[in-house]
Image (cartoon, rainbow, N blue to C red; front, top):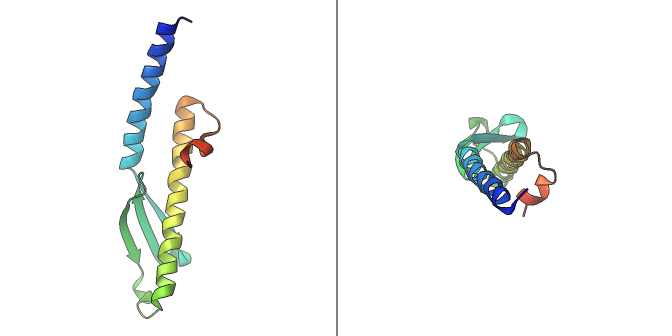
Length: 103
């Protein structure tokens, strides 16, 4: 394959990667903790969009609620990373994506 053809293929992959990143950033993914008492919804950029706290936690210690929120956020983040690995790996047929996405 000549260098010009390789460059065209790489350029096409870059364009598709940018499109995929935009699509992933627009998705909303949720994570839960406390058996569903706390739910955090994030987008593909790991920006929190909503935090839903069950009213039954109103009398709980704020440290407990904070821990539940953090745990739910971390669960959502793991879901985002998993989804990114799956989608990007599927499109490009790449292995080793967990290392690339966690840097």
